[in-house]
Picture 1: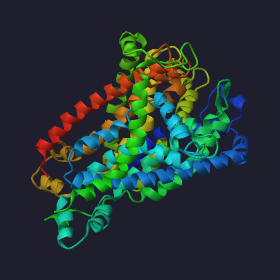
Picture 2: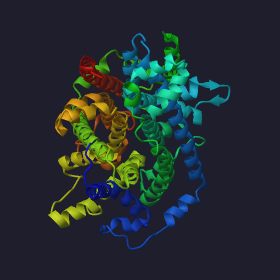
Picture 3: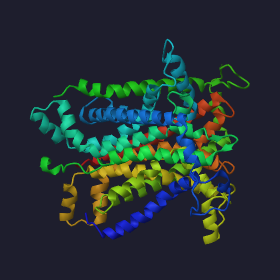
Picture 4: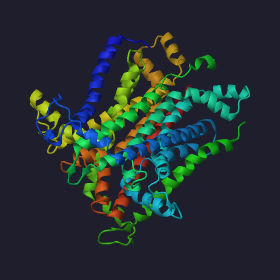
Length: 278
Length: 293
């Protein structure tokens, strides 16, 4: 395709970035203001920076624990979900399984449920069904990792399927003829070509797990409590501690950004298919 | 050729996890929906009441308006997100300096937790303390008051949703565009097709499955939005932004009318399912017929 003037793109992206960043900038502004200053005439420019909110948050050991829980839960969940979805999509795409389109559709129905009512059955499952002696699934990281599959796995399957379907079957067949096993085909042919799709799926499932709030608030108490839930503890019925909440939110952007930067490198065009196809 | 057992084995973990955490809770909710049950109120024990909950919701004006508002919200939000997301994904396909940097910036809204998104937008738009009403007032003389103006509140929830979720669409469509083979485009150019023709006859048919998947995900997420809108408007003014997720929330939590909440959830789930199924059948059937590559 034609590529126009790079300066034009830069100008356009600069403008779009301003729109994207403004609410995040405002989050930062809120986090560096004492509470009283929030309710004065607003101004886009910051005249003084008040770090107290950050100091309080960083010195808070409980929040640090929540942050680590969040990192473990969302990273494990995203990796697990992406791997399972990759296999599932390969199966759906390459095998003639009876009723596979119905299974494909069924997976997504798991994401449709309005959360509020489903909290109770999850709670019962976690406290009364999945228990072995004193051990309960309630308030464990593994419980949250498995539970987050209910909304992330369908998502991953639906975003990956078009990518896997788009990889020409001729490539698999050529490799099979050359004596590759199914696993070799998956690992050496499909995996490199599906890389942009896998990277995007990994990022987005990570985001969903990282931001999940309702389930974590109901099904954890301390050991597996996540940072989003910790954050909501500052939103109370008597009022919200905006500054502290915003400071936590800004801090949570950092690990997310690092993970994004690492994974984003893989969002690049795969090999050209043409060389092999014709 | 290859045995299907391998295929089933690859699907097994997915089916097992979704079976346990998807089907069992659903059966429970379905069971509760046929009972009158208010654990902290008039009927602490579950009393079987047949289809009474369902009969009640057909005449529940609040519920019906919330469905209508939710549909309107989902419609505007999803259409704008997909159109905008596609354009941005196409822009990211071009080579220009700082592409990776801008892509990272563009994905930032996704990392902000929904309750924080709602809170920040609330702080930005609350009359007299928010920056947006202040600027609108001083630049255009427009008085934005989401506490009173239902249309403004509705529009704002849509804009907030677009801000938050367009990057998701951009990323999924970008992945789809990157995975496309190059020949059809080169061939079309050699054949003298113009940009619009290439879009309608080459790009669109090839990325239709990805667009469909993205529309689905966004549609069902928009239909069950709670956190963001709750923080921004609390469902007000009046019931203008009381989307169905919020409506269920209010029935289940402050009122603890669990049986009725379950019935509404079952119906909402059913409506979402039917809507998506029809869309799926229509679009996939079409794709199968027109499959050219």
